[in-house]
Picture 1 (tube, one colour):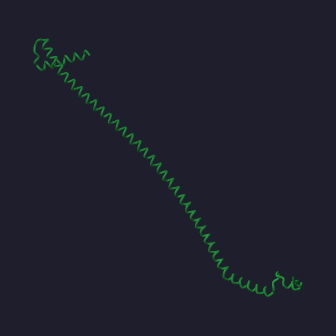
Picture 2 (cartoon, one colour):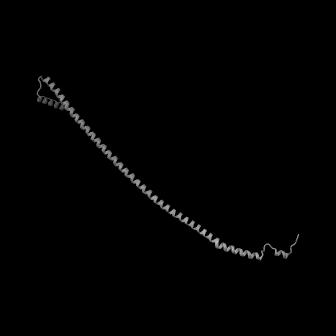
Length: 176
């Protein structure tokens, strides 16, 4: 093994660089720093500014879209409430009209029923009068025939027949 002298050892210390290396390193670092500072840093700053603007613009657009959505929601709610009010009004009007139509139909039905009843009563009364007249004629003929047989003389005179029939019917009605 070789032993290295202590003075030599201090010269060869790997932790302490040579002065020339320090000067070259400093010059290279300075050149690299200047190039990076003049060319690369502005590009990074430009990209950073564009990205910041894009983010802020996106946030502003998002806020604007949110405000528009809120306005649209308010407008939609207003339209919905108006539509509900209009629907309620239409339902109420339809209910009122329905009630009026039902009442009108009920009135017409009652009038029609009253008219039919009146017509039926009139028809019945006319038939009754016709039956009374017919019966009166038949009863008169039977009464004249019966009276002719009882009295034994012919009642050919129309005026006399009429008096006898009227008297007979009057007596018959009084007895009731």
